[in-house]
Length: 218
Image (cartoon, rainbow, N blue to C red; front, side, top):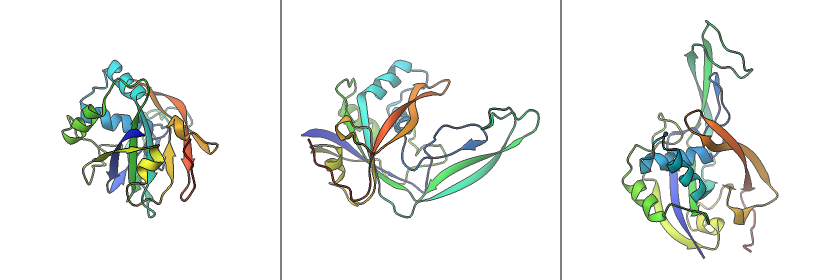
């Protein structure tokens, strides 16, 4: 059996950024690794300039998240931006461009956090930070406040899928980077932070367990 922290991410809007430019900021359909690390870093008071602290957090945690809402929609808002770096790499020059920002509306996620074999951070530290955050946690962007307390419970289970199954509604697709749950149905995301100050990211593989799929723990 392994230990897991269970979080609930619930808000009117959420935004979990993919590879972006100033004129287009999409959101993926579930919380990204960089977004989850940023949320926890804010709660723990880890500054963006604290590269060692951010690296410790990154190497200590695996995330498995389940989509709990079947009525999630995407909303796009628009901003005017000067001298923007566009999707086609060109600068906008002296003329403003219209920037599009995507948000998930009415999305809900249950997240199981597990420690890696190289963890330098304890669950006790994370639990304390979630209950008494140093900085205000948000759901991807500052315009996306949380609607409920993040921390639900700590549980014991054979794997993250079993941990998530202990919490309703046990219905949606699960996205995970847990090594114990690696499967043949994977997607590649560029959301592993490598340098927060200049926003550099590397890729990772995320295993997908669609709604209703079976899994037999090893």
